[in-house]
Length: 480
Image (cartoon, rainbow, N blue to C red; front, top):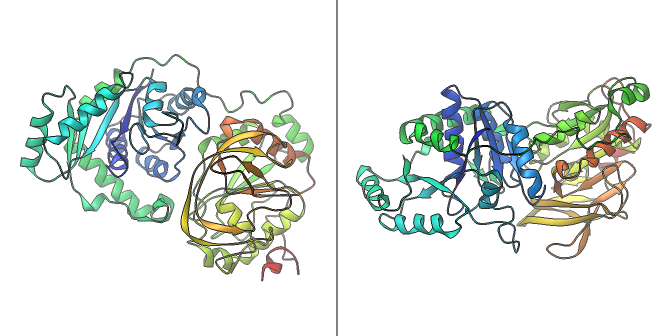
């Protein structure tokens, strides 16, 4: 059993991230081992959670992974912890469009058998807060609303009026927080600025959040509520489970490549979006995962036989990424060998010829630029072409979240066929490269990581000595 509580809200912008991160940090400072989780596909909030707890922030997404995996993934992340705090997504009952409760905070709370604390933005109301809380408490009897935390309270008198109104609601007030400008995190086109881009400031913000929550919330009452969740009858997810007899493992890797094949994973400020389970799956499949920073490292890690470039903000760092020509050339040369390369969203932009006019790796005959509109939503996908990630016909679910466009949007061999929101193909498959806007969660299809590592073991590609010299007329050089 792990004590657990879900932090939800009536709508986005109510202060879920503020309260959830503050609770995580406050309980961690009190000596508890806290497991941080986030409902939905978001990558940015888990970065703040990790900073607050010292543990990987993990996502619980009933759409991407399916309802049956939510509990096991939770149990895997929370193993050995004293408390798990789960931050919700959007409003408590808001889920995948047109799919009822699927992937909503309420859905995940029910799957985890966890009580919910509702964070209410009280800045423009007093007695009406009771009607709001009553509605959320009674809407779905299977969702246990265990308490309310009032956010953006204006004064002592305002707090008194709110508490009086809620006295008869049957839902206890577990805290009241004043407006605090010093704990706000800056935002831009895709939400909060990630921790990786403002670590020193983020550390100060999280410390201020911990203190604000410690002073304004009844931590003992929140912990008691979490401990009352009871047991969760299920086994934790294991990265190596379901790998099958054909998984490479240590012995096969050693026999084929002289050791575990090195899979380089892009990180740093420009590529900070990743799910913790992906690294665990690659490791379980037999890979040695080495993180590198395309903003600063001029070479790929020594012995690289596969490359994973996930999501992030290359559009913010396009000049710096472009200026690192040695690494761009090394990436292009690795791709030219046929080595496995998995590029997702930001990785797709990095492999293009250019991004907002700045030369990139030139692996793909495509150009990327910022767009006026945000592309956002869950997608049902089917693999159109055989690739290092999936055989043609493999069905997966994914998520798009970007304010850029790539022209053309698909290559001669597209990566995915999408059924939502309208039928189309997108992405690129060429030799060992799989590049697409679609974010997927590999825990939903463990064969993805296994297939990728198998290609690393069996392929002829790879680099030695940490990188390759520039080759005239190819790759990054041709992008000019």
